Amino acid sequence: MMNGKDKATVTAPTAEDIRALVQPNRVHRRAYADPAVFELEMERIFSRLWIYVAHESQLKKSGDFVRTRLAHHEVLVTRSDDGRINVLRNRCPHRGARLCMSERGTSRLFSCPYHAWVFRPDGSLSSVPHRKSYPAEFDLNDPLNQMQRFEQIAVYRGFVFATLNPNPEPLTTHLGEMTDVIDNLVDRAPDGEIEMADSSFSMEYRGNWKLHMENANDIFHPSFVHSSSVMPARRAPANASILDQDQTREMLMANGFGYEEWEGIQLNGLAAGHTYMTNFYNKGVLSNQQTDPVIARYRAALAARLGEDKANAVLGMNRFNNIIYPNLIINAQYQQMRVVTPLGVDRSLVRIFCFRLKGAPDEMFHRSIRFLTTLGSPASMILSDDVEMLERCQQGLERDDGPWVDFSRGLGGDRAEAAGAVSGLASEMPMRVQFQAWVNYLTAEAA
Amino acid sequence: MLDYQTQRRIESFLHDEAKLLDGGDFEGWLKLYEPQGIYWMPSQPGQTDPLNVASIVYEDHGILSIRVQRLLEERALVLTPMPRTTHLVSNIEAQSGEDGDYTVQAAFVCIEHQADKQRIYSGRHTYHLALADDSFRIRLKRVDLVNCDGTHVPMAIPL
Ligand code: FES
Ligand SMILES: [Fe+2]
Image (cartoon, rainbow over all chains, first blue to last red; front, side, top):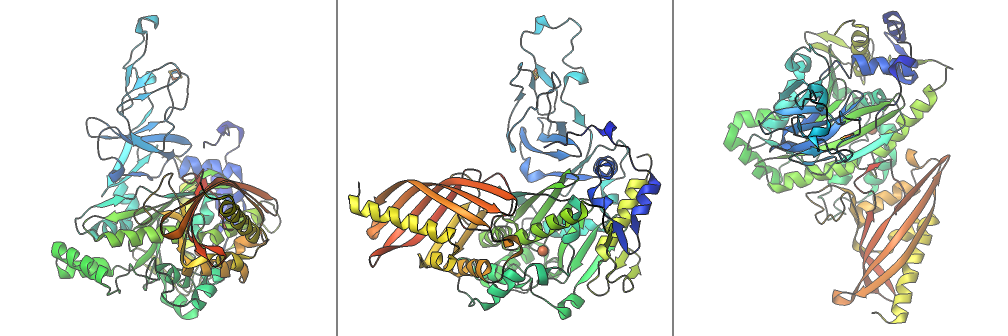
C-alpha cells in the first residue's frame, strides 16, 4: 500500500532537528513516531540508497516480473525482450490507474484494463486502441505516455537493487564488506547459483520499520522474549518429531542462552549502517558442524566444485543475521532473507524468503524451507513474539512522556577497527551504528 | 453416503474439537490426534507439497505438543492477554476412505478477540480421521485459509 500522505503537508525537520534526536547513549522517540521524520527517511534513505527489489532467479525469461515497493512507489521489476532488467512504476500514465495486480508472474504485455493502453515489459507503450481518435501529435514514444522508468538499477550476484537517486554511489561501495555475505550465500551452492523459493511469508506489524532492524541484531532479547518456546522445547523429548529431525525443537531451544553465549557472540558494525553477528546458533541441522549424511553429500558436492579448502572456508563463515542498511537481512548459513518495507511511520511489512542452493541435495532445501516456516511463518513460535514486542514498543513511543530510548548497553566495551566497530559484551552497538548512519543519511543535503 | 449415525458422530467430533479450542483446553485438543498425527496449514492455495513449499504450520504430534505447552504454561507474549475464540465448523461432508479412515471436509470461521483487536479467519478444513474405540483420532488435519498466501499478522490459537 502506498502512503497517501501529501509530502507538502509536513514540514521537514532540519539537520539540526535530526542531530538533536540521537545522542551517544540514546535516541529520541520521534525517530520512531514522528510522521515528518518518516517522510524525511523516505526521501533521504529509501529514495537515495540502494534498495533491494528482486532476485534474478525470479526474472529468468523475458516477461517475468515481480511487484514490490521502492520508496513511496509501487514498482514492477521486469525482464524485457532485450534481456535487461527494468524497474517501472506500477501506474498507467493515461489516468493513473494501478496496472498490474499480481505479485509476480510472466506477461508479454501489460494491458491497462481501463482504456486498454498496452505496455511492453520495458515500460514502452505498445499500442492504444482507436489510435486515430488521439491528436496527431500524440506520440507512442513520448516518455510521458510510457510507464515511468527508474533507471538506476544494479545487480550484485543476482540480487537486484534500485534507487531513485540519480547519482548514486556504486552499489558495491554502498554494500562494502557486506558483499561477503552475498558471496557466501551464492558460493554455498555447489552449482554456483541460488534460486529463490516460490513460497515466502508476508507479515504486517503496527510499528516503525527500524524496530525490526534493531531487533534482528539484538542478542539480548531472545532469552526473555522467546522463553515461552525455549522452555517447552527443552522439556520435550529429543526426536519426538518424525517430520524434521528435531530441527524445529533445536531452533526453538537456540534462543535460550545466557551470559556465556552472550559473550561468545560478536557483533560488527560498519559506517554505512550495516551490522552483523557471528557465532550464533551453530548447532542446527543446516549448520557446518553437522555430520549427517545429507550434509556429507552436500559437502562433497561443494568440495568437488570449489576444492576442499575453499569449500571449508565457505562453510566456515559463521555469521547469523547480516543487516544491509536500510532494510535487507541475509542469513547465508540458512539461506534466508528478509525485507522490511516501511508502509507508514507506524506500519511495516516484513517479507521473508529462502533460497535453494543449486546442486545441493534436495533435503538441504527442505531444511531451509523448514527454517523459513519455524522462524518466519505468521504462526511461528518465535517471530510472533518478536512482532508483539515491536508493536508494544511503538505503542509506548506514540506519546511524549519519557521521550528517550536508551541504547547504552555495551557502550564502553566496543572496539573501533579499521572497517568499523566490534562489540564487547551483549552490546547494543548495532543500534548505535544504525542510528549514526541514520543521522548521516538524513542530514546529507543534496543526493 | 455414510449412514446417518456415523455422519452424526463425525459432526459431533468436530464440534467437540471446536469446543476444546474455544475453552482453551489445548491439551485435550492434542489428545484428539494420533501419536503420528499431523496439523497442516499450507501457505499456498491447493498446495500439495509440504517439503519444497513453506507451510504456515506443518507439525506432527511432537512439535504440536511444544506448541500446546507454550499456549498453556509459559504465557507467550503474543498470548497476553489470552485471546478468546469462537470456532465455527459447518457444511460438514464425510466420506469413508481407505483402511477404515474417514475423509471429512468442512467450512470454518474463527473469530479471535484479544484486548482491543478482533480478527476473523475462515477457510476449509480437511480431516483424515481414524476410528479409535468409540470415537475418532486425527491422522491429518489440513487447514486451508482463504487468505493463506496473503499478508498476515501473528497467529497463535490453532484453527
Ligand atoms: S487509465 Fe490506463 S488506459 Fe486509461
Ligand atoms: Fe527475536
